[in-house]
Amino acid sequence: MKNLKNFYILRLLALSLCCSNLGIAQDASWGIGLLRVDFELEEIKVYDAPNGNIKGSLGMEDFGGRPELSYREDGPSLIIPGTAWRKINMDEYGLTVFKEEDGFIQIFAKEGEGLIWVSLVEIAQTKFQYQAWINFMANSEHVFYTIGFGMNVRTEPNASATRITTAKGENFSIHPTGTTNGIWAEVIILEYDSDYCDEKRNLLKESRGYMKILDDAGFPNVWFGGYCC
Image (cartoon, rainbow, N blue to C red):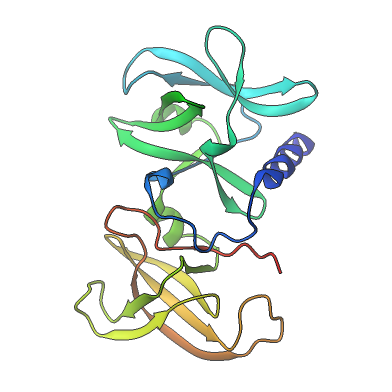
């Protein structure tokens, strides 16, 4: 199973069009969070609506010798498309989650149509893990960077509090502490004299405070770097 997982991860990495996630757009394609995938999954049911009818299933399937996460209805199985995935690690992808309602989450199944629902109760019985963006980011081991613009760090989790510093670009690394307040997260900011590609860069300053880590629509204001140097 480990080889199967590694194969699929490498295939997904090849789908990435850009090394860096910095400067990516903030829009509805982010959804509300992500579903971390269990690549040893045999099968999990999917529904047409929360508490609705069973529509099909998700599971691993062999496509011409290639193991793929597939969506099955009546008829041939379909490979989950690349547009359904969000890169969340150098060796991990997750499925974008668009809605949460009545104990179900909505994910993308196939091109041109098909938002489907998965039960959180059933997910809890697998190695899948659903995380809203605020929980993923606040508790992540990733080092984050701002998405194309500067973000203020303040003494308290509100826009009227005293500004401590402004993090902008890849010279400022952002380290969430795990403490959140709404869409704000406590962070440690490390300011360097060059970006993360410079192995000899020097730390200039360390700051600690609150950053509005999600925007008002719930999309991330920061993301991790692509690490392509």
